[in-house]
Length: 177
Image 1 (cartoon, rainbow, N blue to C red):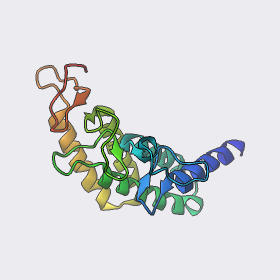
Image 2 (cartoon, helix red, strand yellow; image 1 turned 30 degrees about the horizontal axis):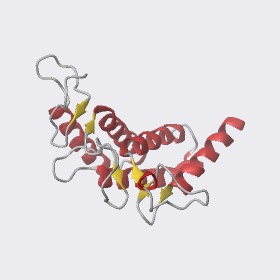
Image 3 (cartoon, rainbow, N blue to C red; image 1 turned 90 degrees about the horizontal axis):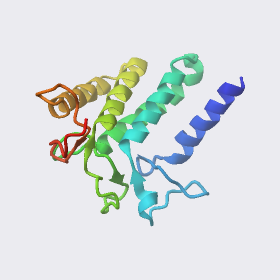
Image 4 (tube, rainbow, N blue to C red; image 1 turned 90 degrees about the vertical axis):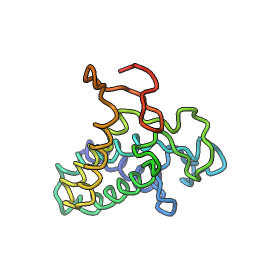
């Protein structure tokens, strides 16, 4: 019972404080009063991979709870996943950005526009969990889009391992795997 209360309290904090529906963004950092700090780079920072990872963790937890107690949470989490996919997807070159600025301003992180393998893995897992829990076909469409982009860009055609870091266009920046 203490375990469930702790998870519910953490979920409540994430879903009702860090998620800011008026901005359609899950912030990494918020002010003590729960509002976003839109005046600082740290306050405006978003990492789509972190959000998607946290959301599928929550979906995994709610998959073991009775639907009568988890339905509203699953719907909210699914909406956050969709918003994050739409916000984090690079509309010019495809793939998920590493970092984003909530207001679209220049980012302090020099690697903000890179494509990292783990961000794509978290996005794919989040889509599969969300589809399993909701049967919303949008998640299958996102899964297919992410899966196709990921498998077209990350694997090394010669050795089969995945490149860890790609530039915005989806090209390896170095040979680290």
